[in-house]
Image 1: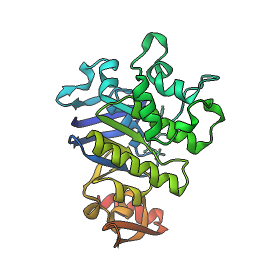
Image 2: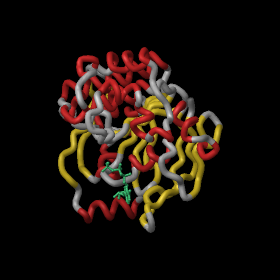
Image 3: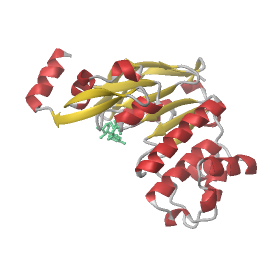
Length: 271
Ligand SMILES: Nc1ncnc2c1ncn2[C@@H]1O[C@H](COP(=O)(O)OP(=O)(O)OP(=O)(O)O)[C@@H](O)[C@H]1O
């Protein structure tokens, strides 16, 4: 499923966040969204998921305007990796993953429910089958993160929108989760758009990196072309080097120091 975003503007009250984002994600792509804290990555994902309404601009899914689709229709096409799990006392992992739509929307607004097979497959794929009968609020941060992914996988959609899938995970589990996302994408021919803070993960796991700055797409392309010292300076405000990881053939960023406010304003004036 392809996603086309055209001239998207969005503000929270009087605070503009997105100032004309245009981006097309083709069926089957794995796109990493990167940028400084607060630049609007999560907001963009929430707009694409239909959880926020743009001030102007358009989003289409396979050519269908997002605003013409019901929440239920959107939920059949796109799964979102939620930042939090529902605070339902006593809810077990299996209950959550099976009744994810129920848990997130309440009984009258149920968007989807996984079958037993989908639930078991999602629990197994994300490595949380052994936690199936545990109550959510007894899980560690890393376990909860994997359960969040299981919830998205169980929705069985063609698009996965992930907001920091590797957050709270130790280095081994970071690699496992990102490898899993990459494998799922291949096995199910998924389109994946993921916020990734770790640039080395973006370079290694995504085939395309989209960097946001000042509410627009500042850079967009193959990580081997986009990941440069100029990107580190302009998008992240750091001086650094970019080397090639010989084993994977992907760039690795070596940030050296934060740029001064003076250097940053020079970069801003220079575009
Ligand atoms: N519900 C909200 N109400 C008001 N302002 C918000 C809200 N959510 C986010 N913002 C603000 O909008 C801006 C963009 O936030 P967003 O969460 O999209 O950024 P982000 O790039 O995902 O950040 P991070 O890397 O820190 O997760 C920030 O300045 C944030 O404070």
